[in-house]
Each structure stands twice: as C-alpha cells, then as structure tokens.
Amino acid sequence: SQTIHQWPATLVQPVGSPLSLECTVEGTSNPNLYWYRQAAGRGLQLLFYSVGIGQISSEVPQNLSASRPQDRQFILSSKKLLLSDSGFYLCAWSGLADTQYFGPGTRLTVL
Amino acid sequence: GESVGLHLPTLSVQEGDNSIINCAYSNSASDYFIWYKQESGKGPQFIIDIRSNMDKRQGQRVTVLLNKTVKHLSLQIAATQPGDSAVYFCAENLRGTSYGKLTFGQGTILTVHP
Image 1 (tube, each protein chain N blue to C red):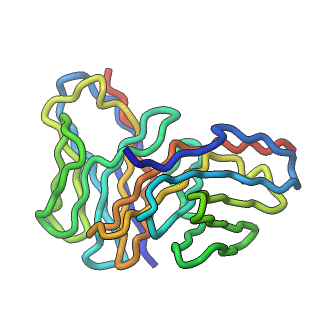
Image 2: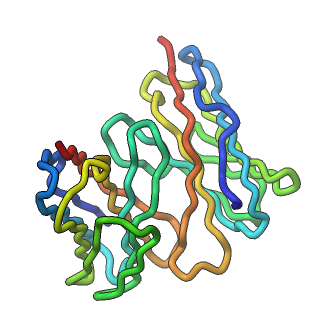
C-alpha cells in the first residue's frame, strides 16, 4: 500500500530564516505531487504541483519554492521566511486516478 | 470565479443521529468529486468519491449524493459517532486538467455530542 510522509511535524522558525520541508511517498511510482497550505480554520490553498522529476508548477506567487529531486520526493523551501508563511503545510500525491491522498502535515510557526 | 462552497459552516448532532453535510459547486464541467475528513492537527483523509456519471455512491456508513441539475453534492453519515467529529471538505476536479487539480470548499465543522 502507499504511504506518504512529511517532516518535520512541527517547526518554529524566526522571520528571515530559511525553510525546508520534505515529503516522500512510498509504494507508488511517478506520482503527481502537491504542496498545499492551510491557514487556521480555512480551506486548502494549492501552492505547487509536480507531474515528474524536475517539473514544478506554481499556483500562486509567493515567498516559497518547490523542488522534486527524486520521483517520490517533494521539497518545499524558502530562503527567508515571512510571518505570513505560518500555517499548516500539507503534501499530497495522486496516481492515475484523480484522488489525492494527503500526508500528516507540518505545522509551521514563524515568529 | 467558479468555486466549490458549503451551505453550512457548522453542524451539531447527537450521537446516533444521521448527519448530512452539503456542498454547492458552480462549475458544470466538473466531473469528479471527493469528500475528505480532517481531524484537528491531521491531514485530510479520503472518505468517498463520486464521478459525474453517477448520482449516488455508498460506503461504510457514508453515502454521497450528486445532483448535477442543481450542482449540489451531499455527504450523509449514518449513526453518527463522536469519532466522526471533524471538518469535512468537498472537492471538485475540473475536467481536462492534466494533473487532477482539485478545488476545495471551505469546510463544514461537524460536532457530535454523546
């Protein structure tokens, strides 16, 4: 069966510091991968998606970037965090079907 | 723009009652719909899905109904339990997108009282 991992689970970072969140998927090949952000009490906002290694598409302009160095690895990064980057970051994958399956999420607090 | 939305942001029920969570969508080109359950501090969990060529689909204690005429989607939970308390999101997939882009509603908070 497929599983999706995210780490760290929680992170507290100062404004201006760099960020690296990692997501890995097991049990599937060539998945579509997604990064979402969820503000407190709100819905999910799609940030990036990837249909293959090195292929990244951005949905919204922002202070973040994404990379996919391996088939089942998706990384969310920032060079300098802003207060507004705080939130719950979710990685998801999908296969041939359209269903997206989510990871456990990373709670990011920028102080 | 076109979007998926929810009629009720909160729903409180008694344990054992049936729950109905509603969702309206405006894009007639959508052909796939999903319901997710999200517990506090966790990622959304897939519950059930339905394609536009169906109007009803049943799972374990859950049923999704799709009314394409009025662009309405609902999730019915039978014999609601305290463990069902969570935020429920509907999502739609727009036909023709190459990567299965989903548009999510804002969510409904379901609270089940023992």
